[in-house]
Image (cartoon, rainbow, N blue to C red; front, side, top):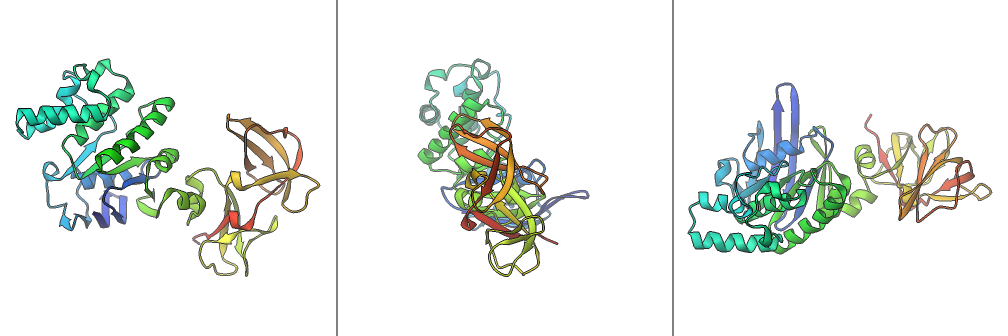
Length: 349
């Protein structure tokens, strides 16, 4: 549906986007994920028409989108601040765009009523934004965006202003809403959990470039670069060189079990990544693994995080186990994992 090809955007000496190419499908919930300043919002603004790229093309169903002014594009952009009119009621805020298009009054009334029912705000139609909670204001902004029935809805950090409980509720609400209205959603976020829970596919950005585009589970379990491995969720990273067979050769620990993502040159610098929940914690007398001692045990309700100090390693190894852990700080243990649960990737030299 939406095709971004070779988009580059510079601001003076700073390259915000460097030859970015993406394809977004009809009806998809697509996330642009990355740290602050990586270029994801700049790309969103180019799609919306508020920025002009230095080079590259953006097409919607094969038609040149860059040739159209922002108000002629079948796209809505929901701003991070929501940008509601404080003097207008909820209903008037939602109707504003339709009134600017001079649609018949009865059609406006019908469409506003339908969309307020969809987002669960029918009872609040006559209230002003100041009388609403943060989650309700976010729903008003969403209603105003979808009432115009755009082909594409762009959301810039849509949940960043909400507290944790409301964020969790609104993540479910956004997913339900996207399914109900059938509009393609593109969301910008720096929150990995938000992207993983919402999106059908995720593009991970770093320094203006796309590192990896994948569905949430493959992205999490099979990162293709050191940046993705370190940015998307917690990971235990080990440095070394690629061996002749499976495994990473480490000066400190010998050969560590793992599977390479792609074909690696023997002796080339490489990185092994293993997720905390894939690491097994066993007694010191058990065979295999790395010997260490427990530094700290943190209980988070459904899961416990255990930090293990392994001699020869600066960072502790993080282990995640379900429920409360019986192990205590100071215990002598071993950490180990299966080869298929660890990913080995090349490090750019």
